[in-house]
Figure 1 (cartoon, rainbow, N blue to C red):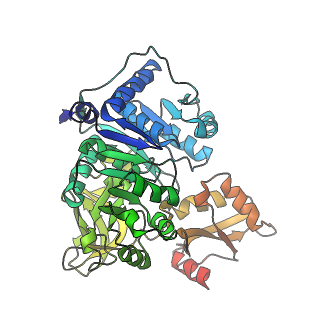
Figure 2: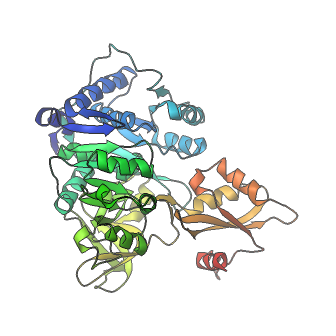
Figure 3: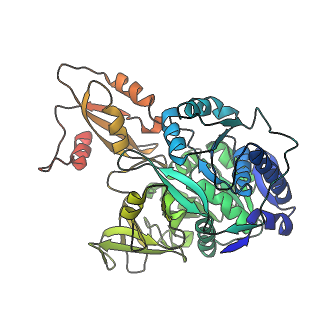
Length: 491
């Protein structure tokens, strides 16, 4: 099914309306459309063809947003790259996606060069800050969008230690926007603040929803609680996407409640919201909408509306109207009050993982995405997420899979075995901690292992504590007992 291109349509219907706001600069839809087509033409001049994968590694929010729209206009496939990753981790994703070009800004130029050089053959890098591109390249654009076409490949950490590329289509994002609209509403003057990285599906979803709705996305290069407060007042923000850690840091500044007067909702996702945070928000009159979602569901799958927050404390709300959610056990739907695995079905669910039919078949069965999360519905149809996948560590909104960290630790010559779990942290929610068994007659200090991990993993994945033990707890079949590790960490 084909529909009119979102940006091209908005350049006509919302020509002078604000599309992007960043650091005191505002682009209307006509400006965004014109510049996106120009950069798309420069991509084509470099040999990018429709369907080619184009990776983006940038910290500058406005450049990032422009590049996302340029990739769309060029009919290429977007591969967002997390700039918190190590060069080797990025290189793996570049090779797996078989990217044609890696676009970066000045802040990420060194990291991009290091990562691209690790791929064989080396991936060409375009630093858009250093080289604006051929000025005479003809603009390139599109008139329609195939809703079944692949828009982006977003890599998520895998339980085996290697990431998987979740494929998301244009239709996934359209239905996500349409499903969210009835619950959050859409007003002509909406301004949606995104202080989170745009390489996450949550940030990317705001960019796409804004152009679909014809509203404005307000972009910050990095999260700064003071800048968020200033934007709430100065830019009259109506919607804010954040993770609990971000909102906690904003409230820690003890802001004047009038800062939040224009807000219709704060979408809180990424990890479970502490009850104390929800209570503190309610005291200040902040309309918090807690959400449940995954990369594989194009962000939101369920949302708790602010008006339900007091009576449904701790809930992730009800499914979006485009989405079905069940709680199942042994393949059978559970009645209200009975726990089980959360499964999701609907047009926002990924069609699968990039070149991983095995992983796709394991995750999507009979049309249902098996999340691995444990949840329960109450009698009113409100979802409560009890566990964000048994092994997953959510640290400041970032996902850390223990298997990935364990794989790196076991590459150290002194490490025989390693087990990683999350431990509570007052700032980040949880941080990884490692239990390490050393080889006989080998030694390794905590600082040495941390440095070893830091050279191979993103900083947020590096264990914050190390426990040296004689053996790891395992059951009769040899499976690592992570629950026992968590108990050890608390002892």
